[in-house]
Amino acid sequence: MENLKVVRTFVAVLLDEVVRDRISDVQQRAMKLASGVKWVPPENFHVTLKFLGDVRRDELSVVQSAVDEAVRKLPAFDLTISGMGVFPAPRRPRVIWVGVEEGREQLVELAKAVEDTLVKAGFEKEEKPFKSHITIGRVKEGKPVPGLVEGLEEIDSDGLGVQRVATVAVMQSELRPGGPVYTPLSEHKLV
Image 1 (tube, rainbow, N blue to C red):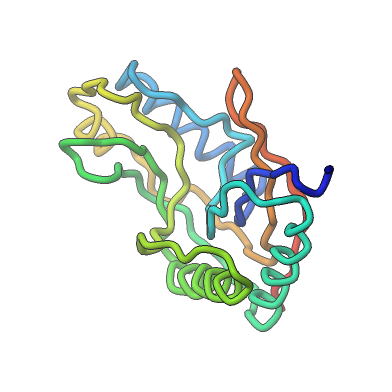
Image 2 (image 1 turned 90 degrees about the horizontal axis):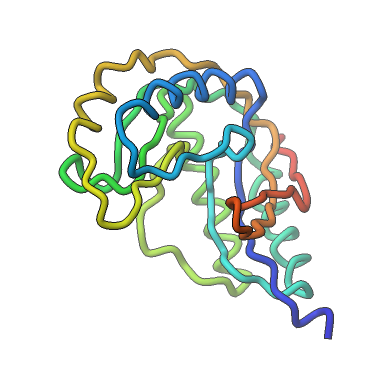
């Protein structure tokens, strides 16, 4: 019966504490701009490469093998974390993010490799194109946020740090009343 239980799963690039702290600094300034936002705790900052949703426990080894296969041929690289914005559009912000400048092409290649090997292993293909970003807040449904986008433009979010991408993690996400708790299940090294 244990194998039929599911684990909410995603694949991510985890961020170093120094980078998370710098992102947290700009997040603190962004918090003053809007009240209708659920802010992501700094320990949860990451770059999602692939969200899988509920995966049966007995399929986790398939996920881990696929991720291992995807990353083992790719060289480690650096990301420059810089800039802020919103998805999907300035008039309807739902996600507040910090961006990736240098290393974006390698990150896209990494996400594609993870996506392709997981689809080959039988998991669902993502319909939306990959967008390299770090979510720092989510606008609560139906809450207007006047001045948010203009305020974000005023925050100096350039050069928030350099993140070395040498590993990719398969993560568990437990939804709790206080917010999700993320736990690495396995790490997979790039070349």
